[in-house]
Length: 225
Length: 220
Image (cartoon, rainbow over all chains, first blue to last red; front, side):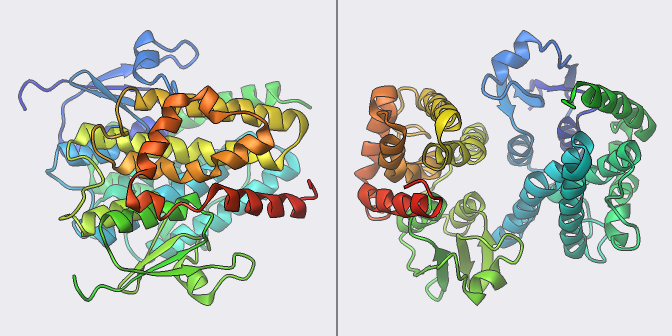
C-alpha cells in the first residue's frame, strides 16, 4: 500500500478527531492533517461530509468517511495489523456496546454539564455521574477496557475522562469522584502512559482548559437569561 | 452450530426489533421469539439488559447482545457462511454503517413528533422527517438496494420503518410516496423478500397501536 493517501480533516480541540488520530497512530499509518476553521468550514469538508458537515472526516485515496465510530471501524478493517477489536464476535459486540454507551449516555451528560446552567445543569450532571459509575463498574480493576492492551473502547472513549475533568474545572461541578470511581479516574492517564505515541498527538490539558474556558464564556454570554 | 440456542426479546411494533428478526430470517436461524410487555418487563429482560432495560435483546447461548445494529453485525459475524449482510469491501461497509447511524440518530425521534406532538412542533417534526427521508432517498440513488444489487445491512437498518409509514401519513396528513417515490419503490422491493414480508406487521396494526398510544397521551 505504498501509494496510499490518507488525510484527516479535524479540529485540534475536538475529541472526536482525537480518536481518529489515536487509531491512525496505533496502526502506524502516515497521514496528512488538515485543520478546519469550524466557523468557516472548508469547501472540502462540506463536499466530503454534506450530510452532517462535521469533522472528523477521513479521506482515503479520495474517498471520504465521516462519523468517528464509523471511521474507526473502517481503519480497523482496512489496516488489519495491531487489531483494536478482539476476534471473538461476542467480545466485539461488547466493545461496540460500551463505545456506543459512552457516545449516547456519557458524552451528552458531560457536554450538557458544560453547556447548561442552574437546575438543568445539576440534573444532567447527576445523570452523567450515574452513567460514569456504570462505566467504572464495567472497567473494574482493569487498566484498560481492552484488558491487557489498549483496545477499541479505549481509543474511542478514554478522552471523556480528560474532558470531564476540564468541565469540572470550568463549571466547578464534580463529575468523577476519585473515591467512587478509582479506575475511571486514571483510565485516560493509563492509556497515555501505555502508548507514548498517543500522548504526542494529544493536546496538552492546560491548553484545552484555556480553550474551553473561553468557549464557555461565549456560551454563557449568548444564553438566554 | 446445530445446538445454538437463540432467544429474541422483542416487542412486535419495534422497528429496531424487526432489524434482528429480518437478519435472523435471512440467515435462516431458528430462534425463540418472546414479546415483552413494556409496562411490566420480564425479569429476563432486566437481567439481560440491565443498563438500558430495553428491547430488543438477542440472547445467544445465554449471552445477551444489546443495541439492534450491534446485534445485526453480531449475527453477520457469527453466521458468516450464509447471506452476508454487510458488504465485504471496507469502504462499502463504512457507508452501510454511516447510514445505519444516521437512521438511529434522526429518524425515530423526528418521526414520533408527527403522532405525539401538535401544532407547530408537529409541523416542524413533519418537515424534518420528510427532509430526512429525502436524504435517505438520495443515498439510495439509482441502486435497487442500499448496498447495491443485494439486500443487506443498510436495507435492514431502515425497512422496519416502512410499516409505520401509513401511521406517519395519517397523523401528519401527507403522502410519503408523493414526497419520496423512489424510497417507497425500494420499500416495496424489500417487501418482496420473505424475510421482510413475514417480519413487518400490517400497517393497520401499527396505526391501531399508535392510536392507543395517542389516547394515553390525551391526543385522541
